[in-house]
Length: 436
Image 1 (cartoon, rainbow, N blue to C red):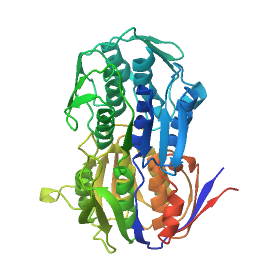
Image 2 (image 1 turned 90 degrees about the vertical axis):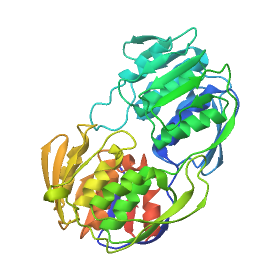
Image 3 (image 1 turned 90 degrees about the horizontal axis):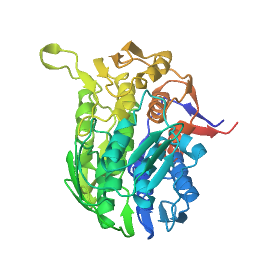
């Protein structure tokens, strides 16, 4: 099993470019099944979850061609209706094939998806929405959906689920008539998929809001779509730079996607500086650079009347749950006390046992709340990555710690961060990937 060996306590310096958004690339790959014509995806991150999704589309009958390191062409002239169970277990995003395959061929058989173990991640919203479009749903050991035709309708989601929104939109673009999708998720990666579908000939209005109006089409065509920068990776670099007292410039950022992230880091005394935008961000804001200078204040900003501040997560545009682990790790190096309230997943906080073992002062109140008191010196330890984001958080902690740390189960980190060890070494980090 591969592992990272890290010698911590060394400040880094240099410039880093975030990879394409994992959370946009995965549904984009699934969306390629909506047309028989070739679709070219650019800025695709070369990470484990993407590789599995490409294997799934190949197993379904699509042709996948690697045009460049970050560019693939997918041609789905014919599409099978059954997703391979073994592949589905390797990636949670396999659920995203439900909408496209159902819309394209009228039937889909989907095994339960795999993915991170961070608590219950309900799928009900996906199937309620697809049933509203006219699908019959059967649940045995697999999920089975079928429909002679899909018809647009008014749908109010019982939760603003990102993947359910994407699944329903992908089905609705090939449905008859108009679909009005309310309480829809509107994260940057959802907006990116909607823009991709529009470039394929779909009619979608309300992109970036909680209400999407989709006018169904009989057929979509091929396109070329560029995946946007991963704002979750950018947030990870901000936290990493601050706690290692590094001087890092993060290039290719969409600053309008970082407003709440910057707001939360400011509560911890971390203040990145925005450099002027230089180019267009493929349908989003212009791309800019973000510099995190060394010697950040790293002091928790109290609320009015000296109250202990709270950092919590919620759907966009609130602070993303995927950055809670990063912010918690950053808080261990900040002067003051802060309460973290994880509202979405009851298992995300359990990685803090590893931070405590490294020397962090953390009180686990319940599965959803912790109190961090800092700063605490961290010391190298033997660690194991439980999920993508916690794995990155522990990697950041190891880089800030005194001494040597070994992180096992790094495949979890590889699922979401493209060649993170190469990027870190280029910035001066002492990190090796041990295959022993």
